[in-house]
Length: 346
Ligand code: ATP
Image (cartoon, rainbow, N blue to C red; front, side, top):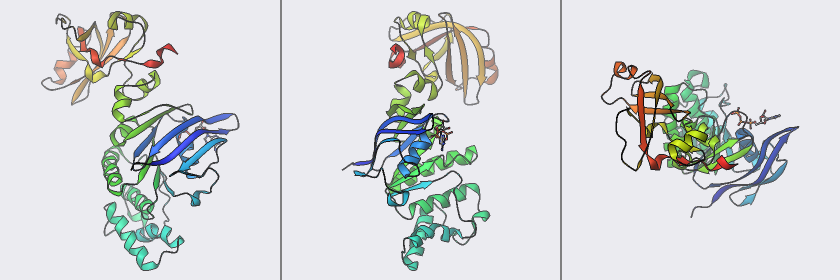
């Protein structure tokens, strides 16, 4: 049965005047890949450090697997933290680095070696056991840090921007691998990132943080398709909001609405928009950004405001799309993609 791996209740942490965590309630399920996403300074790392036990909360309660751990030391909690800088021991071999945690726990030497090799195989580093960290690439060092975290089979793995130091290509590859690894070992992963694409790619669920609070918790699809606040709508994906006058004239009702750029089609202004299920708005193309596989159009609406539309370059070339700059167009999308953002009344 799916239980709760982590439960946070009324969690607060202040550093002097700064409320780094300003009242967080959250439940993370057993076996979940859970991401904490938010801009720099929004409190994600502090929440992670509170779960790990490196910080003591100013207020609130922390449970791991149904047991309160609020006052316990880090080593008394069944969690392991992977830091961005990996924190490997440079004078030890890869195998010794991985086996170290077991040595501390007085696991017999033969068993330590077997388990270290198994963990290295899980992160696809068979045959690297005798090297030292300095003889590895950044991506390989990252894998050693993961193997070291996995070898003790913690109930929860806490990862603080673990891919932050890698270049983009490697980072994308590691995102896929990390997710596959998590599925394979079945351990709860709590992953801190400020990169929305990374969170959407990897997570079962995401909590979006702002100023020490959680704005929304949901699956990637819920967060992307049904943002609960205008902050979430802007932080995750391209901000594409209709407010005030443009909401009145385009949607036909007051409020704040979000339309994702890839849902919007760019048509000639003369195109008829007579299908009742379609929303439509005319405007002038202010900017065209050719992205190779797709093109981003920034359109100033006659109704006021600006929308971004993303079109796949199926049949069009760079020259075709460049010709749109400064021209009159009609934007069109299915009404079900006009999503009201609930916090507009606040
Ligand atoms: P980043 O992505 O930059 O790591 P974050 O969302 O993880 O940001 P935190 O590191 O949790 O944010 O910081 C939240 C707030 O608390 C920030 O304003 C930060 O300056 C402050 N803060 C964090 N740790 C301390 C500390 N030890 N002493 C004083 N202030 C701190």
